[in-house]
Amino acid sequence: MISLAAQHKCQIYQLDVKSAFLNDFLEEEIYIEQPSGIDQYFHDNGFEKCPYEHALYLKKEADRSMLLACLYVDDLIFTGNNPAMFNDFKRIMVQGFEMADIGLMAHFLGIEVAQRKDGIFFSQSGYTKEILKRYGMENCIPVNTHVDSGVELRKGTKTGDVDPTYFKSLVGSLRYPTCTKPDILYGVGLISRYMETPDQSHLYAAKRILRYIKGTVDDGLFNKPTDNFSLVGYSDSDWGRDLDEWKSTTGFTFFMGDTAFTWSSKKQAIVTLSTCEAEYVAANSALCHAI
Image (cartoon, rainbow, N blue to C red):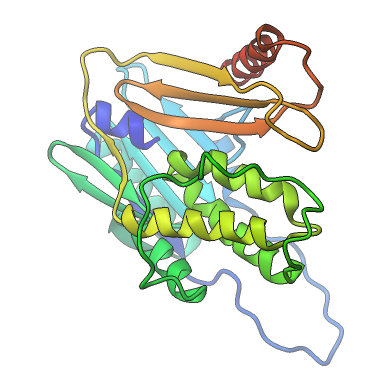
């Protein structure tokens, strides 16, 4: 959505439901009925729901006007190429659903967004700084790579036990920054394989990612208009780098224009018998994602 908005030089706006998720401790038994939802409004007013991403709605007019809306629980962001069209939409949503008009999207689900004249930049610098502080790494020495090429991780190395709950919390905290930092996705996926019985070697690998984040804390993704705004994807694999199961890793990324907008790095489900076979498995995964 950010990529499309940047390409067409549109601004993204944000609304917030005022009364969502009010919580209190209840001593009595209560019965509730689900109120008429925003989803029904979209259907009744000419919006088409994306069949692959059910939180995404699109409305198109005969004059090629377009409005794109994305709903996540109680937060709603939207953009369009016709100011009159999305001004009407904003007015109806604020009146009909008691929403607060936040204005230009600047902070959404922990992602910081800067809408500039030359494009849209988004990152998670605030969130990553919180992670560094939470795990006592705010003053660590940065490193240039998030994975040490000389270290080979595997299960049962007996380098000293680590609290699994602590390790799972650390890995979970590292997963969310991959929304804006595809450069750490491989390393985060790698340490995720050892959450059940982690040891010191796995903890060292996780903290290396934190040290890399320390040096790239303000990095993010910048979307800008380009003359060649088309879908381009790349896939790759390693072969048998998992030393416990001898499985390979699939990696792919897709671009719209000059900026990546989706990416993946996962251990393959099968054991491949050659580099060529591992590449075919990776290409197949990328093709399914493209479709």
